[in-house]
Structures are given as C-alpha cells and as structure tokens.
Length: 170
Image (cartoon, rainbow, N blue to C red; front, side, top):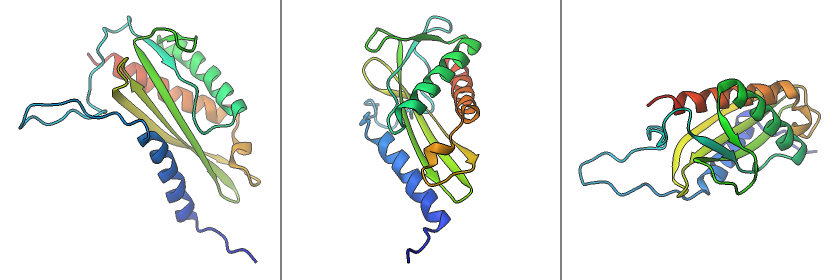
C-alpha cells in the first residue's frame, strides 16, 4: 500500500520546482560601485517610455501544449485591454521578452498552478519578475486536467495588470 504524500510536502516540492526552473535563467546582477546596493529584479525601472515598449512572450516552459496555447491567447486578450503592445512572431525584435514557467500540483480535491514570468531586456537581464499561484477545485490525478479557461484568464489578467503597472511606473 502506498503512503499518501503530505499536503505541505507537495506544496514545497511544487514551489521548489517552479523556483528551480526560474533560477535556470542565469541572469547575473550588473556590476555596481562599492557601497551601492545592487538593484534587484523587482526594482529595476523599465528602460522605454510608456506606450513605446513592445513585449514578446517566449514559449512557456512546464505546461502542456494545449494549456500553454490557451494561456497565450488569454494573455493576448488581456494585454490588449491593458494597452500592452505584443510582438507575436518568435524571434521578432521587441523591447522586452517574457520567459514564462509553469508548474502544477494536485490534491484529492484541488490543483494549484504556480507561474513565474520574467521580463528581460535584450541583453537577457531580468528586470521584473511576476509570480503567483492559482488554485482550482477538482482533480483526478493529473493536475493539468483540472485547469480551466477561467483559471488561465485570472493568471493572464493578474500578470498583464502587473506588467502594465511596471511599464507605467516611470
């Protein structure tokens, strides 16, 4: 008989997996003068004036293709509502690129999606990290099967609102 996996341990493993994927980006901090606090990914200002920035999303890591496609569509819709200008061709020039990492874990009655979006400049330096979780009720083994369009819409909305707020903070 198999022992059930404790809930806190599932959360810990899933969170570690998402953070581990996100850490693989290897974006070193820029050099700073001695005595000057190094800027973090959360406090670097956008480098392009509001309304002139273009954003390209790279293919998402960790999610099944159908989930990634549906999330991409939801982000496109939400980005239009937020006034964000997306570049839709892979490899096309853009002001910023977004690397997305997704992971999911399941419980007997729910599933949780963990997401991380890193906004990087053209040199690959991370300027902003957006992360969060979305819990969905109902799962029967594979947590990705519980993901519905409403959950993806909420992830897209929160992420694009935060991107727009960051771009407009000049």
